[in-house]
Length: 272
Image (cartoon, rainbow, N blue to C red; front, side, top):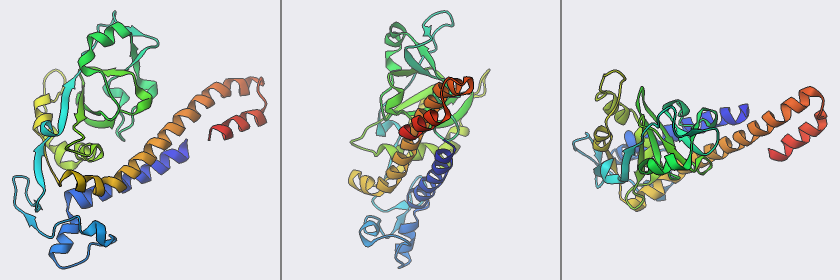
């Protein structure tokens, strides 16, 4: 589990650095504009970038790239509702995501989830989650971002978490996720926080956030290495969750002497 955590920290740093270079700083475009070959890039990938930056409302962006709002790139931007304390919550059932279940590294923490019954989930159908949805914390702790993975479902969320459903015909989901975590979008959020009883962010602010992207096919090609990092991170998280469940099941039996050490070791090796 600790090895997976360290590996994921490295993979996250690599994904973040590559995204910043290609989609924020536009290093390959700047290199081509200066007559240089983009560093560490094969010719086919380099050809996907234009050789000129042009002025836009977001500053300099690659020629041919288009500025879109989050609202234009999604099929749904909404938030949930919190059930009353005396109604809807169960010990098992539909997983319910709150802000404290989203950590600063984009991971949804299984041990921080609550559960609601099916009747409550039906009443909160507008915020029922799907795989690939992007979650953004909008109350209390602002701007934490995570992607809904298959293991979480079925699930729902409360009013402190916004869900963004990418329109996959227009945007590569991993790029929308990366933009949501970027310095520019996080600054857009922070500058528009409403300071009431609890700091909060409106859905209209999220919808209005703007990003620059190439055409859909170019997005798919350029996001491939970033998506590969993301997939490795998700795979490591899944393995760690499985190992944690095995650990929690075996440890009491191991400490009580009910289970021999060699049998516990074999069980863990089979999972890993």
